[in-house]
Image (cartoon, rainbow, N blue to C red; front, side, top):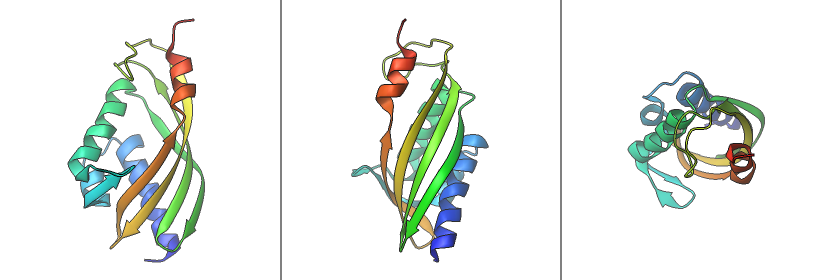
Length: 132
């Protein structure tokens, strides 16, 4: 696939899985042997991770601000926002609106996302969820 098609694949995956709440996005866009940060998850395991975020932040929205692509890899810098309504990282629901960023590098193989390395600003998110 071209780098342009790889970027489109990555953007479509996040748009479908997060913004559109499409529960088939992992099955359609990820490889069966998908690996996240060195951990085998497969499609079902990654869907559980997506579901955990959506349960904790039911109105979660995602926006890709920047992508850089080379060969079979796409780097995406993203901003997320939502309201905390479920258990997350040990934090009971707070009802607080939060925003946080992440940067992911995704490797594409045979037209699917095969591997991802994610850096999420969990410190910034945790600080927003703590009691003031």
